Image 1 (spheres, one colour):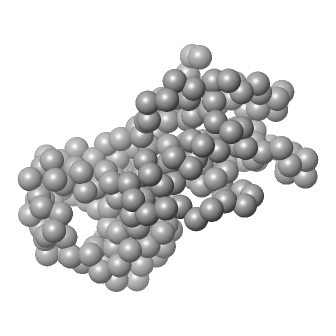
Image 2 (cartoon, rainbow, N blue to C red):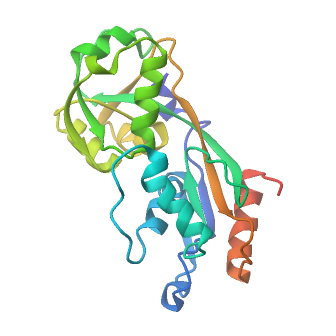
Length: 238
């Protein structure tokens, strides 16, 4: 259950590594950063928002932000990305980085029937939801998983659509509604007691995060060092 945030086994360990943002010589001067896995999860957003990019299109993940990220990597405008799903492209290398799951987050003083931090799926119909906007992989996973478990998504009372998990966490903290977000993304607020989280009984919201890059790209020494350190830390063989 979500009390595991207090368990040392599930706390996010620190990672010292090289972060590569592109070919900008100025950013290369800021090579070594202390970071943790929560920040690694946000790495694709950091990379993706560097430079002049078009606004993501509406639609499914594979027609919006996800394909734009793939395009940037294939065109070698960025070197690495972090995604939560795969697309069938032989030029993209996927490294299985880590597992994550979505959890239901609520305000810290919110009362809901639960057993061992698990609630029945039917309870979702009585809650006010804050959701990610269209084009989000998290949103797609939520809707697809609920549909597979015979819960009509039309029963969700969605009161707002926002662009980021940070906005969702803050809105939930303020008592404006509840939401499903990545457990890893929620850890900071959970550890601070700002929100609570629950699982849905007999519903699997697990997913994988993949580290991606172009197979045809020749890496710089800095990029090689970053990739090797990442693989060493996560015990990945390439």
